[in-house]
Image (cartoon, rainbow, N blue to C red; front, side, top):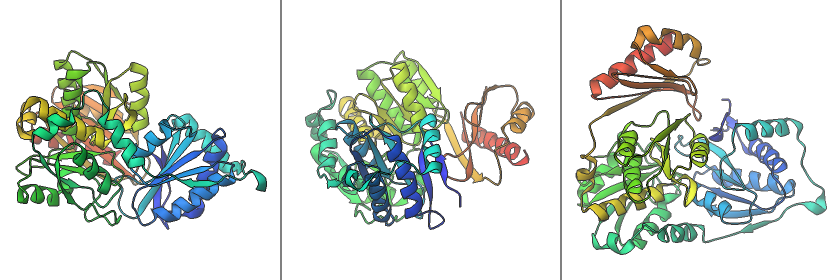
Length: 448
């Protein structure tokens, strides 16, 4: 299987496109591209992680960089370790929500940001030349640095709007499903610091996913059952690298992942009003929330790097992606499930509401997410030509696949950055309307 190379990293199936040799070649190209200085490397808990870690570390050292190995670490933790140190870059070995057989290299510049398209193109050139390796007396070393999780949590606890005492006084009990990923220790530690009783679920750090790793309601039956069994106030689910967050209310109802960002933005904008940035596939509820607070929303192509670029350009105070990815740039400009957890708990503490009461204040919308295997190139022009007939009059955004919006709602059709699939996502006032939009859009894509 071919590698998936995008702003979301270099992803592939272990033994079928991605192996230690491939990882080393990309890491060497990255090392050649970076300026002199140390590079932070972290990984999630996948069984293939140690093999790739060894390959990446050796390749970086062969290009003259000292490697700082922080061990098992979430994506946001690794980003903060780069941001808050003298590192010139970072590598996160994780395929995020992808299935067990996948792994990936997520590459960070010295600010802790994902590389943009131009930087990825420069890496491709260096990959082809194989240049950048240094002589024997200039090889880099390796050091292991502990405490990254503690530093991440300490930074969160220092946020001006976070009142740990107020959260603790609510006496919350929360179930945490970490899907045996990097959040298995990190999320319970944060909850303990906030005075929340934590019931760990799949938090053993084995890297053997007990259910599909993407945190969506369809994959979180265990969380739902545990919330009811433990009489918990809410549940939190994260993906293996802890940059996505999904919520469950006290009844065990697992909320659509799109609601995470809406809740977080609603809280933050009440404290720090300012612009918001989201991607083209994110729920319109974020725009509803932003309007209530009198601020505007910028939409971008899908991909964290694209959203972050817009946030920094527009001075956005909060943003993210509707897959459960909350970004608060005042801490660090990357998706961070821990930031999302802190915002949700503080919002509940401030309002005195339950999670169900809080989300039920939003207008009802329905979103349907579909996908199908990508057999060939995404025929954007052919699809675009048929949109008027298939969907009716509407506005079309072609920056990332095709997004049609009209009186009935909107639908976004695009090839995935991370998997060989085409995603079709629609939102409307009712589930029936959203399903109808998906059905017509998917039929158009498959005919093109």
